[in-house]
Structures are given as structure tokens and as C-alpha cells.
Image (cartoon, rainbow, N blue to C red; front, side):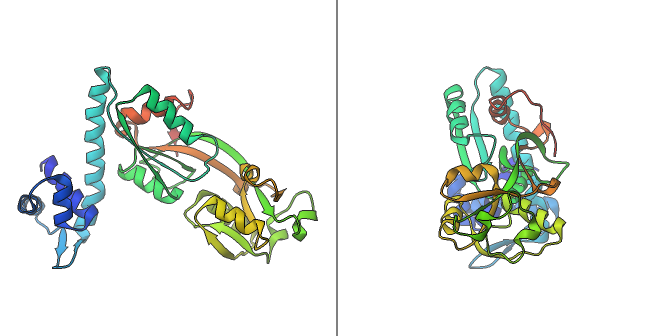
Length: 297
């Protein structure tokens, strides 16, 4: 099995199209098709279902994709490690993050990294913690700043960034603004909630806290960015349970602490792949965070 065959396979799997994949790889479409056929002969199975309109992965193709992406990441890390030994850090740093992550100023960190390593291309993706964990484990991201997850424990390590309690945000005219100094999930039973997509760390933390308290809640207004959430709360359309540092983004809102159990602690981490799969660029970025050693998630 040749590395170029795996590279060609991953490109077709990601693009779901032979012509687009061939253009991206700058190879002929006939050559790309021949490469895929050679890989299928070696594995003695079909990897794609081909129609005149689209290309989809077979079950065998889906099984191969994750492994092929991890192999590519390890090969890339090997090349970059050799370059690092030679005194120059090159290659690509692929980074993922949630919005407004606690414990790190992502833009400032990347600016400091670029000043030290100008030959490294930086790529950034913003999405939810669940997707970020999957992409780091699969080798599509070098590292990610996310909510602590328990998924893929054999493939992920973590560096702790911050831990903070969750806080209830409401409009100053909402009755909760004059309620008790500390609220519990039961105090919020029946309220209209504004919250993030279920893949986001704050949403996962809040869902866990309410489940632990045996309180059912319905998220009526679901958003995918912090400022939309704050706008909706500011218009008194609902309340939100968010990490404490969010309260500083909209001082006009009233912030009331949510009584803490373990489930109401919002912890953020830097997620990394296994030690041998961690790229030199990711190692260099982590050193800018401080001396703490990565541990297993």
C-alpha cells in the first residue's frame, strides 16, 4: 500500500467527487481513478459507490477513512519533526476552537506563534467541542481548544486551560434578577431558555447539570454564536446558563450564580492527539500556554 494511494483515497472521500479531487491534487482524473482501483485491488473490496451524479463511501471505505487520515497526520508529523531538528519549524498548524473559550486568548496566542514561527501556515476552524474532539482524534486537526470531553480516551490528551462555574444570565426586568443570590436548576424549572447547539461545551455542561438535578428543560431558542445568545437574553426573550466569563460581554444583563455541583463546573482544555502523533507545530504552540504537561482526557 503506497502513501499516494491513501492520499488519493482521502481526497476523493472528502470531496465526494473524482474530478474535484483530481483538480485539488493536480493529477489527471484517469490517474486518480487508476490509483483508487489499485488500492481496492490490494484491499480486495470496493471503497466507493460510484454513480453518474455522486460518489459515496462503502462501509469498508468509511472504515479505512479514519485510519488513512491518521496515517497522513503521522507522516506529516514525521516530516515536520525532521525539519524541526534541522532548526526550522515548517508545515501547517491546523487548529480548532469553540467561540469565546476560557483560559486562552486564541488570536493573541496565534499572533505570538506566528512571530516565532513565520514559516508555519496557520489554519483555524471554529465549531463545537464534540466535532473538535473527533477531528483531533482523526488527525484532521493538530489540536483544539474545547470543553473537556470523555470521548476517544485512547486517542486524546489534554492540557487544562480553565475551570469556572456556570452563571444564569437574564434581563434586569426578569423576575430572576431579584431572586435569591444563588439559584439551583430547580429554581429555573419552566423557564424559557436560550442556548447553544448541543455540540457546544456550555450547552453540554448545562444539560448535565439539569439532568443531575432531575429537572427537564426545553431550549426554545437555539443559536450558534455568543452575541446572538446575548441579544436574545437582552430582549428578555429567555434566560441563559453560561460560563461565568460571559457576563462581562454584556454588563447590562443580570448575572446570578448557579449553585454548583460537579456538573456545573465548566472546564476547558487543549485537546491533542497521542504523543507520537502530535506535530512539532502543536508542541510549539502548547509551550506558549505554559509549563503544564498534557494528561489523558
